[in-house]
Amino acid sequence: MLKRDLFDSLEIRFLAAIVVRNHFGLPILLSQKDFAALKNTLLVFFVLCFSSLAYADLQRPNIVLIISDDQAWGDYSFMGHEAIQTPHLDRLARESLTFTRGYVPTSLCHPSLSSIISGLYPHQHGIVGNDPPWDGMKSGKPKPNRRIPPYLDTRKTYLNHLDAVTALPNYLSKLGYRSMQTGKWWEGNFQRGGFSDGMTIGDFTKDGRHGDAGLKIGRDTMEPIEDFLDSCTKDHSPYLLWYAPLLPHEPHNPPQRLLDKYKNKTDSLPMAKYWAMCEWFDETCGDFVQSIGDRGDAENTIIVYITDIGWINNRNKSGYAPRSKPSPNEGGGRTPMMIKWPKRMSPKFDQSTLVSSIDIVPTLLATVGVNPDPNLPRINLLDEKATQSRHRIYGEILDHDI
Image (cartoon, rainbow, N blue to C red):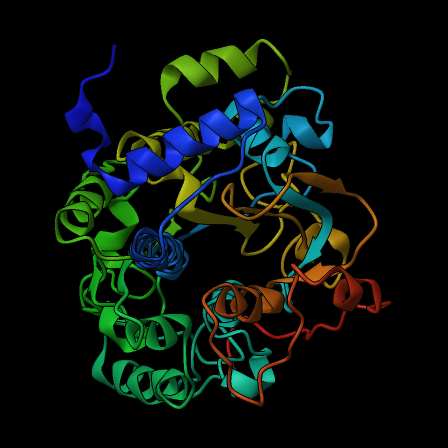
């Protein structure tokens, strides 16, 4: 027999009445007083439920950009390469909205990265070459040392172009995001792009042309990323993380264990080195994604993958082959693109839709409910109707130096 004090709760009495009705077919009889009290209780219950749902919906997703450097669009096992093994990126491709026909608006590194972070074409953000001009360039004089004052002064002026546009970290900082730059970054100090944290200090006298200390990420360490993730976990901050290691970019100096593996797959040492670099990069991506999962952030983290520019490796010597970067051919500008967001998106392997790196910023802004600058080319990759309306991709061919 149940003790009488269990029925002192109105909610328990109501549940008991439901049991009686369902089991014996008898009506539920509540006094007017009990009904009013129950109505108030249920009102509070539903308010709490909807408040919890609203809070969950307002939890901003973390955003991660993984950007490989100088990698051919087909040089992944998920893209069908016969030798290169990329198990971690293969898994990411299976779990993502994956576009195999992705492109960057230029096959030159600096302008391409500026387009990824701004969502603008090079002619819009103003970064239209890797390096600014120098005195005597047109007269055929030798290139100057990139550390001398005249070059440095011109470079500082050139980099002011990015200050005139709103980059992705600028948008997100207004929503309480922290953001971190790691890897390649041509724009000087990480703060120039609106990042709150970063590795690149922009000291052009100490190899600061395109990353300085930031270029240690992936090749030498992942610790700065680990520390940043720990800090964001501690203060419950949503974050943006830019992971753009100098991988598989030259120098092609992979770990010996990987080089030995690929030397058994080809008689070309330059090819073996490059293939090993691709797997090395894949390993760092696996470590990175695992770190996100270890902190319980996997479900509410958007991961975007893209290559800054393409690459066709030269079989006979170090360097790239014809029709590679910085050409307008697919070897220079094509890349797979992936977007993973387990909380909101279903995986799909799309082999026909044309997408561009300039779509990344408007897509990410849409996920957090932000209206971008009206000058921003607007294609939200999560809007299938919008993506299906595109029938061509535009790009710009630029010289290495302005």
